[in-house]
Length: 377
Length: 74
Image (cartoon, rainbow over all chains, first blue to last red; front, side, top):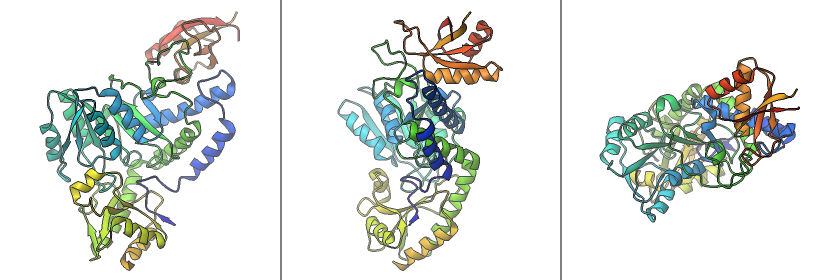
């Protein structure tokens, strides 16, 4: 199987991740923060190292503001449900994933309202203006994907963060497709919250993610429970990371993610991005010469796009195309990719698309084989 | 004479504090708070052999909240 579904989850994982998972089972089997014995302490130290590594990669000054989550959706829900109250207004982009829109649709019933900003791919200024036009006195939060999981369009989160800050509005970035791929800095990007999966561009196992808090406005926790700290108190601790990490944490997954972080940090997101973009560009050029292929975006450009391409073949739905390629040994995702807003924008809501998402372990040879396989359909 | 122990909020704070102190050449051990009183039970502390005031300053400058300072036989 040749794997081009890295936007869903990256595969394969670096060998160090497998070794770390095995090592965690053998050497870090205790519950961190729950005991005073040596194994519990050493497990807590191992977990902290991962927190610190994530903070270094995302340029977060205090590692305690990196919260471990089960996935990106978990973090997004924590922020969305934790900072909004009845009467609040939210602005989102027209490329958001259901992990953003579904919590908002639920909150509509509680009196939260939201508007959708029409992004303008390739024109960051117009995109920022589209968000600015929707601001009103009740706007509490702006949520923006850093890059579309369907069409690979990168959005100007730094400019949006600046605009939000000037307006006194909180700003949440969904970095599902960009953590580990693009340079991210809590210090210079200026977002208030950022959520990312551990199992995509950070090359950790599934069931991992991080939420970064870069503001003094702390979302109310989604869950309450045992944290191993302040056990005398009937109420949840009010300090991060404990207030957001109730219950036994995913030690195994977190330590595995730590090895993924080490891999990404050593190879650097810049080099990973440049490599993946070169493969995405190669594939796009080949597909654009195939008269049966419908493409929806301009050729991927460094700085404006992610290594994610959506396409369709004449007479087929995205699911059918992906199924044909699966028979030939290629793993692509077809359908709506949990992002109906993005499909509405590009007129692909009926057919969906087939999606090629490049990872750092894909090769030029695999890209050539994929293009040849698509040509044969 | 026991070792001074600085109690902090959580194991995360204790690990960060330990790393912070090591940057100043102060070695410390993370220990479970064994005092079990109603205001700081189930927490962690850092046991060290250094000037407690200096350690306290380093931790506080690093943003680590100090709950208590004890002397414990370890």
